[in-house]
Length: 270
Length: 298
Image (cartoon, rainbow over all chains, first blue to last red; front, side, top):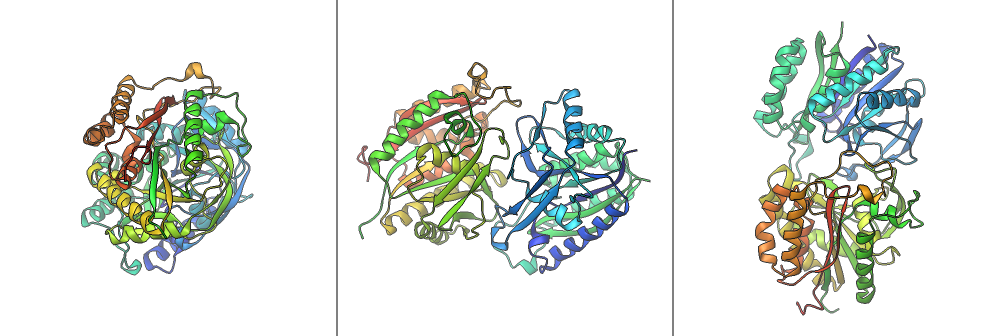
């Protein structure tokens, strides 16, 4: 099996930009802890899917060997910048492009200077300490028109294409995605509604239990009731990469992100 | 200082393909052309801008999406390279824009006065979205007129169309008041496509116009219906139909720019001048001008 570790992490920049806000700081610490676990699995590369890199035409993969710059989030520009310097394994990315095309999914590589790497990828690579020359990434876009099933298929295709490698897989995106729409006291941040909180906790408990069948059964209701980030497609992608199964999960942290829900989850494969 | 006025408002969509087809020096990729009818439409819009010589161009773009409030560019000059996250093969554009910060601040303050959450974007490292840049290039490639960039708060998607358009109405009224108080002669740009059904795969040669057509016939028919109303100045009917148009044609005007612009202009029952219509990767795009000065509107 090519997948040696798997993680579900939030894509909000707030844990990086404002760790002084208690719940966001806890998420930052959890991301660092998850990054330690990822490194301990000794992967050759990290397979990344972020809900915030949108594609609408074709499936896209970063094939540029190094992407560096200074990012300012379109929402949270007031909290500062995110410098990034991300190394990709372009040969492996080309492999994924080929595998997707072979599967009938029209796919292209992206290799352009100053291409706008998305906030979620920048945050996760920074706080989990991957995307270096020693531990490069292979990054896929979120095609907005791909269903959960298609997204799971993509994750499986990528894992199969990299089966001779030790691969850590990271799905970047949030849980319930309803945010406060007004300015709030940041120190009073909490999940927007009790219903969202309940749904998130129910989902995370199912992940922890490793009862994948029950988890799968709950996903349509969760997607309908909790308004998760992109329908939780990042988890479907993880499921695909993990071969549709895992033994249990550890929730390193679950916290509000301006009313939305974010969790750092590590999946145990053995 | 005399009171400011809105000279004109344009429906000014932002497919980066139009910049690509034009081959301006700012854009790195080279094309063989393409989408000429829409580019010719923008040529007419440019001539109109040249005649009016406005003090400022205000643009509301659906690709600067904000969740907490309506944001306004608030840095005097922004420069950099914009690479389109969706179409990086055709849009890698070196931009430099001067921002009318005083007017932006006035818009922000007036929006707050009307109960909207509003924020100034003060980060000098910020990269404006490609929708803002494309619309501004297509309308004034010289970049010699200061701009005000306004984000698309995602209310219409997060809540519902009615509530979202209600916010955009207030935003338009706030914009009008800010223009009036600051004495600007302003042009408004609603950076929106009409029907938004599009291809899911890109042709091998993007500018191969034998591949260009409406993605859906029902979307095309909706566009024609709405454009005919606009050309006849039947704007009340246009706005009555807008929610249905949004739902049935997946119209990008849902994001609010069109409502913002017409609210700022006071919803004139004025015939829009159609500069041109065409599709881009299947979506319906019209360049339409409501010239308040020529129309004798206040």
